[in-house]
Amino acid sequence: MRTLLWLVFGVVLGAVIHIGVILALPRLATNDLWSEVERLDALGQVVILPAARAGEPNPFRLDPELAYAVCRIDLREGPGVVSGVLPAGFWSLAVYDRAGAAIYSTTNRDGIGRNLDLGIFNRAQTRLLATQQLDIAEGLLIVESHGDDVFVAVRMALPHQVMRARFEADLADMVCGNIS
Image 1 (cartoon, one colour):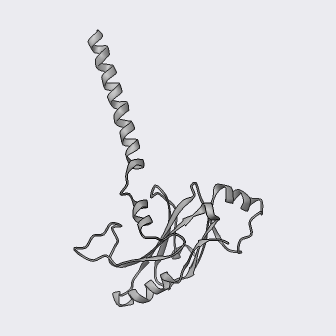
Image 2 (cartoon, helix red, strand yellow):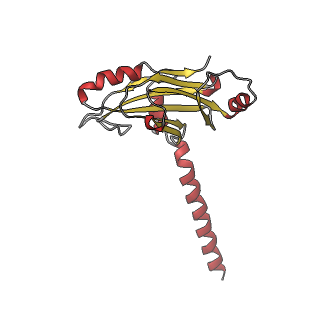
Image 3 (spheres, rainbow, N blue to C red):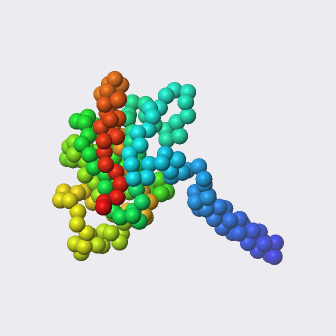
């Protein structure tokens, strides 16, 4: 009977340790998506990602048929904004938190058209917005983030590869940073 009790105790303890390690590993990882985005030096500015090429490292697992832009926003500095006029072709945008989870995504097929005007607010800023203590531009699409560290990825489908430079120039013209 005593041996059975020790065996059950050992299995339960092993399960607790196993689950604890599994839950802790993502927080201890140093080579995660957020770290890769931080290396781009994209805080408050748009960074165009180089096109993926066969045989070269592709840490973001980019599709070579798309053009990509990334920017990082620190909401402790104030609400974030991403705006610009993008080409008529298909594009999509996603806002990610520090863990790499998408907190919002949209495409130009959601009725937005070519004009992108997105505001990103943390919970405290959203409360100020609700009580009309923050002035924002009319028509700003509001996204609430649970944390203060976010990054935005914009993807554009290229009708032809020869148009890559023009599409990347349109991406580079976007405004990304904090609302002043």
